[in-house]
Image (cartoon, rainbow, N blue to C red; front, side, top):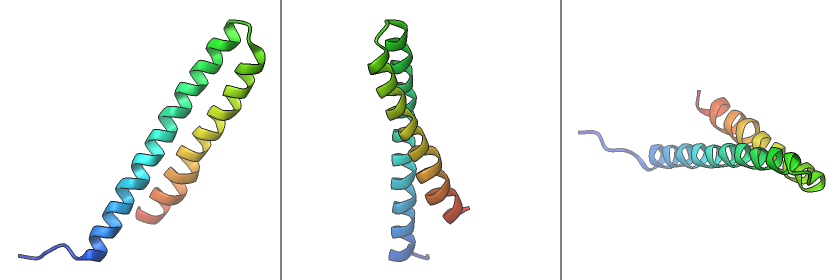
Length: 76
């Protein structure tokens, strides 16, 4: 019965961690963008712009920075 080597275990753990971080950043970015739209509707433009920029950075980091460059390009 073959056992999982430490190298394979380390790579698998790294894939899981990167996937979780990318998912958290992406979902968080969507939620921050939603809050931005709500603040814009309430007439708080400065807070809406700040949250919009923060949400955009989170979405970029989650989908492209970690999701595409770290997970997909290395493991697929």
